[in-house]
Length: 286
Ligand code: SAM
Image (cartoon, rainbow, N blue to C red; front, side, top):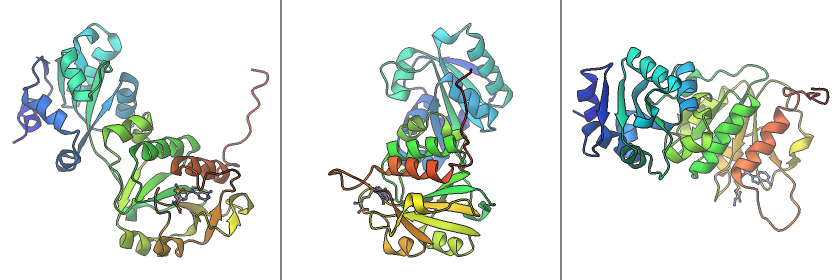
């Protein structure tokens, strides 16, 4: 039985913890490892605003940790009350505990442990105008976090992780999303399952490729749903995925770089695809 399970027998409590040997603190520190995140289906996020956003978006909190300095802070105490009402555990902890949990010298005042949430592939039923992003074996947590944040910014419907990808619930990825982890649905799929699902996808799958035959600005993205397929950082798109695309587009480059960073290329593509959905705003008089 994990520390979390023991504590959950007495939910809705507020406790003070200063020791790194406390079983719940040990469990939370173990979430730095993917093995434990996968086993417990939990992940950690930092910062008051992000945790409030997570609550608003309907994510389930298990534990809220806050620094002793947060006592008397209205927003923190409100969050603690919401956590208790939701059956979670609240720990008031020392700075040393917060630093150890977040692996930071100057940790945020509040940390939340939430249940992971992903969508199954067959729940993805795109409608006209929808944009989904598929990532082939994305390896870098910073890239994945930035792509989730950008997908959120342009109003994409979600991100499909194809094959062996970096964990969207690692602390590095969650940090890089700046809160978008709570806003953008994530799907995980093996290559074969993805290719089988793609056959029934009612829309166009647009792949990006350094050898793409079409300039990305020459495609009209306005008809039907779009599935944007991005390749792995080192190897690009494999033939199996490239040949499943309706078009392979390239982003022109001048200069010596042989390719764009994956997250930058995704951002360029998403803003082009969403050009009409994000209309010009005249702020000159405001
Ligand atoms: N060496 C890899 C290759 O040969 O494809 C480079 C991969 S690049 C760092 C990662 C992904 O970003 C690519 O698979 C593609 O999806 C996208 N990408 C980067 N630059 C691009 C460009 N100029 N045109 C189209 N896609 C690009």
